[in-house]
Image (cartoon, rainbow, N blue to C red; front, side):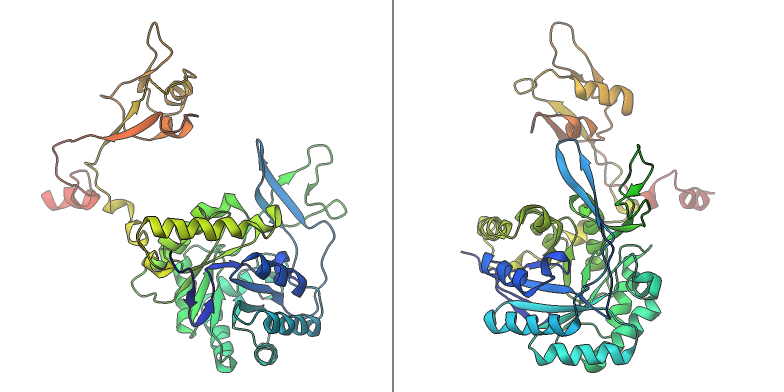
Amino acid sequence: MADLKINFAGIIAPNPFWLASAPPTNTGYQVMRAFEAGWGGAVWKTLGQPIVNVSSRYGALNYKNDRMMGLNNIELITDRPLEVNIREMKEVKERFPNHALIASMMFETKEEWHDCIKRCEDVGVDGFELNFGCPHGMCERGMGSAVGQNPDVCEKITSWVMEAATKPVIVKLTPNITDITKAGLAAQRGGANAVSLINTINSVTRVDLETFEPMPSVNGYSTHGGYCGPAVKPIALNMVSALAAHPDFHLPISGIGGIETWRDSAEFILMGASSVQVCTAVMHYGFRIVTDMITGMSDYLDSKNMKAIEDLVGHTAHRVKRWEELDLNYKVVAHIDPGTCIGCQLCYIACEDGAHQSIALQEGTRVPAIKEESCVGCNLCSLVCPVDDCISMVKVNTGKEKLVWAEHPANPHQIAAIH
């Protein structure tokens, strides 16, 4: 059986499944319940100066029968006194010494950072996470994503923390930035031991069409909030892979964003993360989801003849290339299995109206036919098909050698070279 124990930047945990800094880690009661359920680590809800929060804090994007495909929040960091949080962290570490407990924090001055670091180390936390990602409320005070969006400030504050911290330091990065690698490299220059990403994305989830109020409504008004949940997973995977594949970036990554299952976790780990953090799924389904995550990941590693999480890390990151590096002579076409086709003809409508008019209807049958000569292999038909594996994309041997954009005759640089 695979060993799920990890050493993340010097932080030891029984498995890679951690709770992200969020409402599920707001109290010692919650974190201890999580550890009892099987979570390997928890990042405490962000500590800071006394904060007040609004009432009506969450909004959600539902899609058809799926609730909370995306979750928006306008909640700020912990509104509980620092003394209470630190006392409860001490209690958690005393009861669960072998689980990873990370103190998330956010302050303005070097003195405040240093003071909280010392107080947290005194109660035995295993590491720190610097919240440089909160996209609302705190950024308007010069903290959160206001730091993460400015590489120079990110580097500077990270270096402040490294002056005082003797435990590993993780910098949590904001996705509300053009190039995530600039922030990651800034954290690395500042001396951080690791990074985590992504934090939440700026968003407004919906508008009430009867009252005209943006949601969540606070006495008729709202503000942009932080977006998370399954809907953000593709964005998070892209940013994790960008950092993991960067030739100058060498820090461990804790992956965050839309993780619900062991499969989601495995994708993040393949993209370069060596631990994962979960929030929305726990807010939706509770702490017990970790049981299936542990069993599923262990079985998956066994199926791949891998002995530990570290054996899985990063196998996919190098496969995410720039568009111009892709083979232009690689070709696939769609194939419909008539034995499993239910004749809904959704593939025909999608291709006819939304793609390349490469599927035809046939007399005497409801099973459509692929026009291979015009099929460009866009995958749309296989994506809309409601039957698993009914439509597959089959590789076609074009007889042509690999060709990338830099060598293509239509490339302006090639044309200039010819002339």
